Image (cartoon, rainbow, N blue to C red; front, side):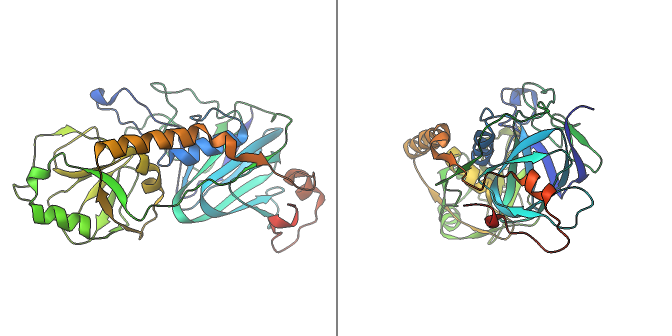
Length: 350
């Protein structure tokens, strides 16, 4: 049987994502890709993959997966979560592990990811990646278009996600230190491009007020709850191109920040656009979070973009050896008679 991760339960929304399907928006095909590309690149770095390799993006509540390979190396970066490793499907308890580090699992081990907190998404990278053919150069899942990823959809119970490697490489495990995944106090934006559809007072109110991430937000758009914005010249425009981070204001006056699965064109006026350097942090925001914006210049946006790309390129500098007792989790679980309770992962880390 080919190596795979078998989905026992899929979680609320688990998809395969990479850095996106660029170059096809003129054909009406969305870019998609990870909501948080920084965490994607960091998780891939921990397992030795190329930065943009396809990984699992877990949203809100994670899946339960069974290892059907001789062994597999995983890494989790992004939201904090309860991540438990069980020796097999018959076990009721296992070992809790942390994010920001790699881990080696054996055939039959179970990965159980619980609810996410402090962020919306968690990236799970697998050494070697998934053995899945790209669509238009990407393995990202575009849910509305039903293309890419695993059969163009979120994971479902019973899926077997094929792995490129049946055996992980022989190497030590590593962890990330000093990677800042915090959100800024205010997200930086470039004003417009349709500022003329709003009065100066409305634009000032947009920057003065705070908003709350709404429960109906998804990978396409982050819907913001707060004081509605008034239109000066109506809320319909001739459809034009949608950039990542565009903040549309539809007829109800409630802003929508367009994200990874955004449409390629839109007909609502856009009061501002979140700069690209702040989009990964924006993509992490959970429902109910307070968010505010501040205007910056193009020069500031360009400098911030360069700084972000340099930080991603230098993620390897933040990777250090993971020091522990020398026994991997798979072996420890197999040798332990776990009947009830939870074993703290810190018990085997130095």
